[in-house]
Length: 402
Image (tube, rainbow, N blue to C red; front, side, top):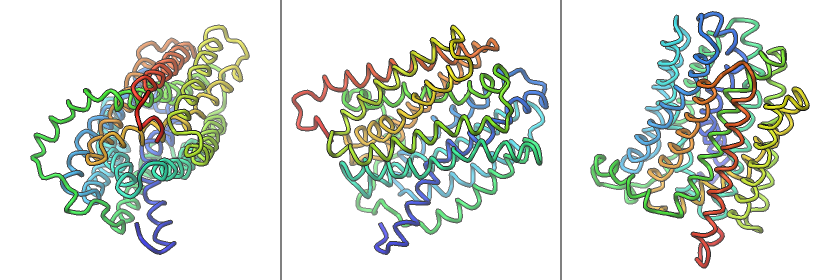
């Protein structure tokens, strides 16, 4: 980490931006999804597959970039990923069919995944234990500003220039981030890099499945991500199409959840070292399961109307602050010498679950919020079960709390 205060803040800012690329790339165009459906003559379910297609590329990309970074360092793979992201953004802006748009989104994701997975690995390169939890919570809090502003900015771009301009803006963001990445220090020294062939490194992913503690941490985060991406894919149509919320106001409803995420991340950064990150994780999953169940009830019965959905979804999204950082750092601590590969494995599981969550929304879309409701509920319950299993594996271990 750079010694100067200015250098530390610059590194913090760039890492936050890299971690936020998944949210930036999706949240900014959420208000435009109904307009894209009309312009490309595609039904809402097909437009929601632009989210799922992105997650496919994002999951597979992380599995590639993790071992590459363990062998070649962090900075060069991140720069390469940013260049791929820029190409994908241009492809999206030029798309004439929903199929070509989905392909462009996959290319975008392959590039963006490098920044997200390697920023987590860079945190683990620089910090350990509670310091890593605190740093990761801080990064998530800072990066949450992007998805908070994303739907609001996207709605304004949509009104002024149309939905294609949103992807032009994303390409510009990619270019600016590439320039910033060049200034970052390399966090993985040559003597800590793995020299085994990449083919063998990829095969070692299978070994991670045999690590119960890693799988429990991974499951807690992965199930939750399935619900979060169901929320991302489902709320534009639930709010705008079903409850007739004007697109320009959608960003305000979505942004409320981001404010909740920022608040719980700040709280997590303060409490994790006192209460223990595992207990904080378990509390977060209990919160998510409860809120998910209430969301399903409101979506099925219509109880409370629009606010019957908004309030429990706000609580569900806010649980992010207690779940994501603690599950990631817990997983990374199981194999610190392979943090790039473990970060990729965890990320692929999280966003792979997101593929399922958003894909189910598109598959069962029926014009009502119900598909989103039951997917969010099941995801929250799955996250809670994983966290409870985690206690069984950690019981009696010196690693009970990290």
